[in-house]
Length: 201
Image 1 (cartoon, rainbow, N blue to C red):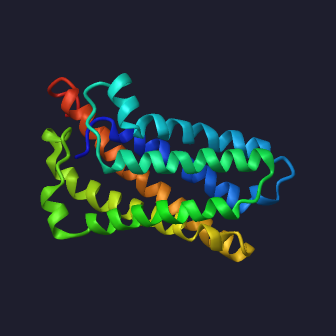
Image 2: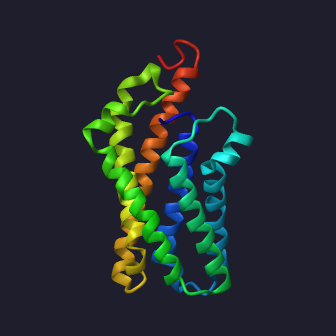
């Protein structure tokens, strides 16, 4: 189930993926690696906070957990690990193994979203006044999960050549765009449902 917390997860994931895409394209050869570590650590920390059922239950009461929360935590841990590795100048290949498993999970969930059963079962809780937007949210979220999963799963190959890095950059940018589309659509639904009658007329 998607609730009013989903836009925060979506926007943070999009920001993290845009930064990762830029790092793949330019940051790997940048002499100043520490600035990239800082940029990746911020969305990583936010993803862990938003994704942790324990933290969310303590600080953000009333926000329902879901598989998206767990995936947010996995990505958050990956970005924190990446930030630490970059900051300390460590080899990134071992971290790519973890990214592959996290990416596989996202890929499976994204493919499942495309199944007919998921289309019937998924409920966008905040969009009572704009039910038609579910048609946009579900495929956007599915594509976002699939492209993110593919990118993370192939992280090891992206480090092998500049050509692979360009492909990875394009994949992560595409994923970030679809995360933004899904997040913005749900946010519009939240604002529509909470706004006084006639505000959007």
